[in-house]
Picture 1: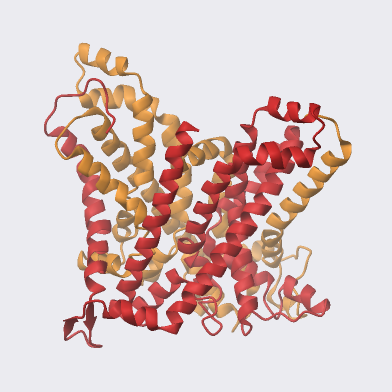
Picture 2: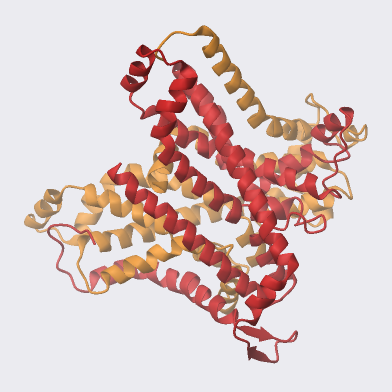
Length: 282
Length: 294
């Protein structure tokens, strides 16, 4: 900073450490709870130090889960979440990059109309039009399958805009040179545009993966078949019965397992994530 | 609309390229939205045998319904609390991180990960901490003589969902504030220091006005987040209770549509929410346009 003030630096560290503590504390408590046996909660307050049952609890959750309370094992739920998150991310990127390519590199009738039709999806979050969207999906026979989980969520105006903005900054000379060399639009797209977009695609993938993994309302209404539950919505079913049959250790093990994959992705890919976030939102 | 100086001459190819996205947009966005609009003017009997066109009756009933007005009130309290708390905390943390720039990467990593936690999971984490029988926070509050039970006390339940939603949103706001603070020219700060302004005065008279566009953007985004992305928090913790005290608008759309099966009312609520989103998005875009010149 501008001048040296040790006290202010100390205060800054203090504020940050306090902030980090508050941010981490709930997860710490959940992790501690997941390492205890069921009887350790009878004293009336959750313990603060790790217990000895950590491996036992996690392997129980992964293999059998809380089947007695009507929730499927967590292994298959994690797999469903993974399929959904990757499906949503890949689907959104694929259809967005193609339509951005069409909008930027071609001139065709109804181009502006198409652009605005995509734009308007920004304003229609799934939470808002939930009943009619459910009805459409039901009429198409897409309840209780991966298609119904993924496809209605893959239209994305923000991803289209991001690619459009990026394509507009790609020098025109590249395309002219490609045309002089006799390359058609698809060859140009595959050999030049796609390699140039790799960083954008990767950054976007991280954000969309997290978005897909964390979906809650949509899987809640389109899946009634237990074998298709995703982990984030499945946890609510476990927590709902946890009060009747106190198995907090198992519920918290499930919470940790459900939160871990997207958190790991973001921490590992921090730089790309920040780039993607700042670019998509602005 | 902006385009390239030269374009490919193909006539059919662009339609093929854009077709998948348009198809999904029409089938899963525009058609349901239009259906919601149409349905908001209809009234169906309980068995679905008869459907009448009732003009604005669904809307009139909604606005005459004290429960809907209450849901508006809860949403307002919830959205304002979450927005104010999460921006203020994030700004404080970002300003602190700017002071200790050398170590701020470590702090950022430790602060940004709640972005990746699902709202429903965030809700469960705090719900567990506030659990009246075994929760650590409820226990601490009790030992301080404050009774806590979000299962029966409406105010407690509202505090619970505000805390969970704020906790999750701090990381997002922190990143944007940090980026904004880093773009403030150092020379301005130095000039202020030479003129004898202390750090606090410099922050409010030089730095804060310069980051005010980001603040405004975040306020809009946070309102949108609190209104539309927090369904999971409410559904996984309080389910709108106790006594409907935490029933926010998106929860009520779901509840009336899927649990109450009152399709006309749910559709009318959808349309009202769409109007709110359109208004918020318009505000946001006007701001983005101004920002480009700025």
